[in-house]
Structures are given as structure tokens and as C-alpha cells.
Image (cartoon, rainbow, N blue to C red; front, side, top):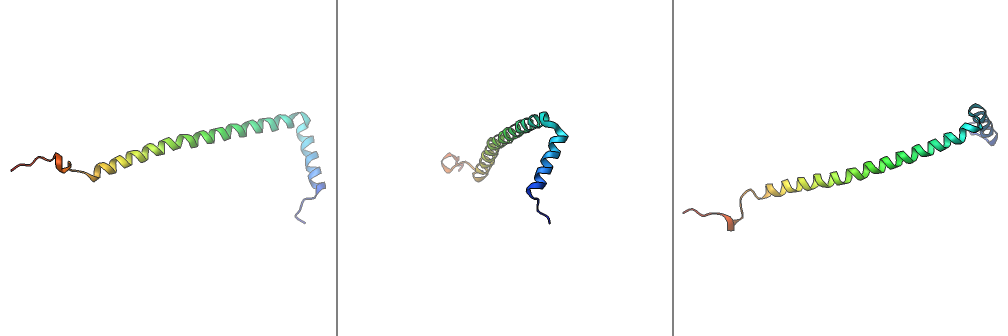
Length: 82
């Protein structure tokens, strides 16, 4: 009961063709393809923009951790006062 047969798909295709016309369908498909290409390029650009930012944040946090590990100068640089 819930499955669509070949006849159902044929009726849907004819209804779409009548509603939109044979001239507008290729234009609509072309514009949809262009939109998907633009969307894909924007998503890949966003992903590539996030990678350097993540690297710089990790480097900055690592530098802060390194500076926290050694609050005093090394022993050879310490000045002894007697």
C-alpha cells in the first residue's frame, strides 16, 4: 500500500513537467547545481580557516603552560646572596 510504483512516478513527473514547463526545468537544475558547488566551496573554506586558528590557539596555550612550569630562573642563572 505504501510503495510507489512506476506509474506513480510517471504521474508525478508529468505533473512537474506541466507545472514548471520544459524550459524552466533545465534552468532550475543548473541553478541548483551551481548553488551546491558554491555551498561546497564555502564549507571547505570554513574548514580550512578553522585549522590554522586551532593550531595557533593550541600553540598559545602550550606557551602559557610552559611558562607556568618554570616560574623561577634555572639554577645557573640564580644569584646567590650570602
